[in-house]
Amino acid sequence: MKIFLDIDGVMVIAKPWVSPQILEDGFPMFESQAVNALNLLLSQSNGSIILTTSHKHRFDLNAWKNIFLKRGVEVKSIERLPENINNLTRKEELFNWLSSNSELSNFLIIDDDKSLNGLPEHYKSNLLLISPMIGLTMADAEKVLETIS
Image 1: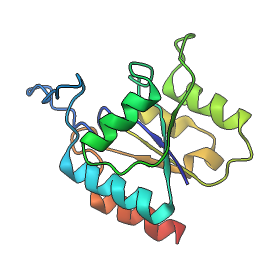
Image 2: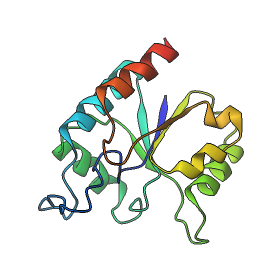
Image 3: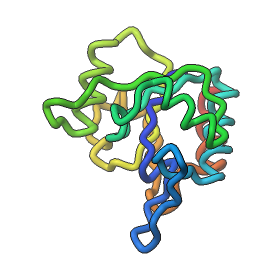
Image 4: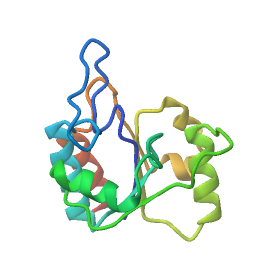
């Protein structure tokens, strides 16, 4: 399964009153609950990550793999959406990518961007909308795994 993954609000909880802990690689620490939940999803679905985060082109793919590994995410494969040179919304970016890769049927979108509720139903049915103040949880992962098994 391809997992379209946002980071801010999913792996790094949005707490405006607290600055996130930045590691020596220059990127924030992931929440442990989110790491555990993502690892469960990746292992149980033989998943791979496609980054949708606004940070997706801040690092090359090898650096991204190291960022995930350093934070305890057991990622085998990592890709990213194309660079957003036209300042598209996340919804537009995902819609364009999914439309031009219509053969992909086994995917999950994990994001906190409520505009993704506007995706067509055949894409939206694969959306796990996360609360940015909570982030990805084990309950979220278990719910997804129940629906795909």
